[in-house]
Length: 479
Image (cartoon, rainbow, N blue to C red):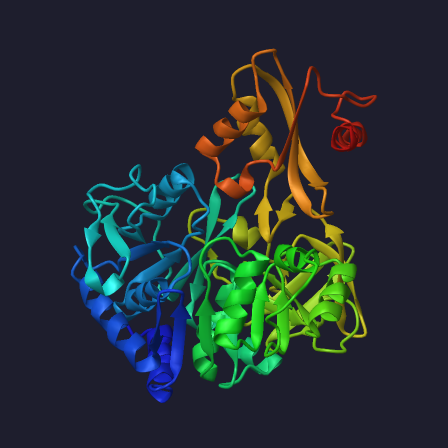
């Protein structure tokens, strides 16, 4: 069977052969060099095949040229890449390996992947600093992939287990092509990408989209601090900055801001960016912040051009949005097919007209989307969706804990974070509870604020009183 994405990448790399394709702090590759390394990696991946079924390859690493080589190598091998958030811990990683029937895992040498691995990692020169582990032996039962699936990505599910979204090559290509067309991405652009390539913000705006346009992709490493961003922008002459709202919050807190001379566009998504932060950032840097709205299951949906007013902008090409009492619904050319490991859940969110129910509340004004809240319980922290019920359940399993409630709360900087109020006996400590959570949950699901009490306050019908819980935290923050 012929797949779309290998052909699309091969064609783009061939057309732009001598141009810079990707760079990180350790080096760079032009398009021809990237294609050469990716095909060598593909030959190594193909050598791991043990049956006629397509190999399923998990990519579990931070952004780097080696990550990109591994991703393209997987596609060129006719295998299916599963893009796993590097913030997931060993427990969640083992769930993914089991739920999705992964064959191989490409990861950093020091990554904590021993629970799902069935043999030691093998160093393959084509993958640079990354290594390959086999995580599945034999040909036992596993969920069957759709024949059109070419990439899988993950989102936090309502059960707490990461839902694996299957995407056809056509959907991935449409997301990239429509983003490039709708935002004016060109071969003259240099993209400084501070979001993980496994996340929809980077995947949709900075991966295939860059190569289709002939733009260059510049990747950072480590925590995206304001100082690291400045160095990246100055060293690359970036014209586009792609980052989560937390980074813009960090930048505006600095007394002086430099490095934005060449940047024409800053793109924010994953969580709401406060209007005051957007205005302050533009005042300090001279760079407009363009809001972008997307959903993991449906791809990029809106973009707010410069001078486009408030809100999240109008629909991108290939997107149709509806707003009503039951929330925002969307139909897009970049929509996922289903959840591999949660049969029927994705399908239940599609209405009779083929629209996906996003779970967001909002309205359309003059064609621009404005969000007002969520129809569900998920908490959005730094662009990642967290189920507070899952987190509270983990806390209740800790020693000396009698009850726990988790919810969204603003930290001292006014940014949304996950907080938990925990009823405990005299032996529990905040440190022990953090360690308990970290042993089971990925780091981004560990509450940023933990407050211990003797008893959870309740309302008149015996349910936890969110008002009183928030007051407890307010008092603790100011006390």
